Image (cartoon, rainbow, N blue to C red; front, side):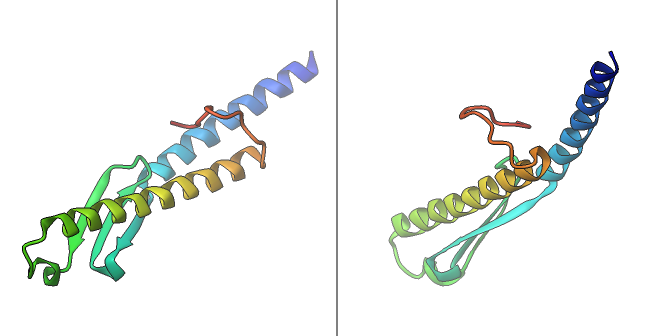
Length: 107
């Protein structure tokens, strides 16, 4: 019975750490860039866009598709950075435990 109590305590500690990490991930911000810095997108840890900065020099032409492509590229760069950050933070919490594919904690 001692082991069960110890396991329950560890589970509660893990749950507490998980909640703390989830809050930390949500508050983290990651910037993606494209076009050599002409477009910058900042996402939080939940992949919500927090800011979009576009250098005015790219509006000198009539090619809206280029601007759209640069925004998409910057967003995807920021998304990759959020994914990497979340993965690294989760690995710290789980001690490198390799979770099964599709099991995405804490979200």
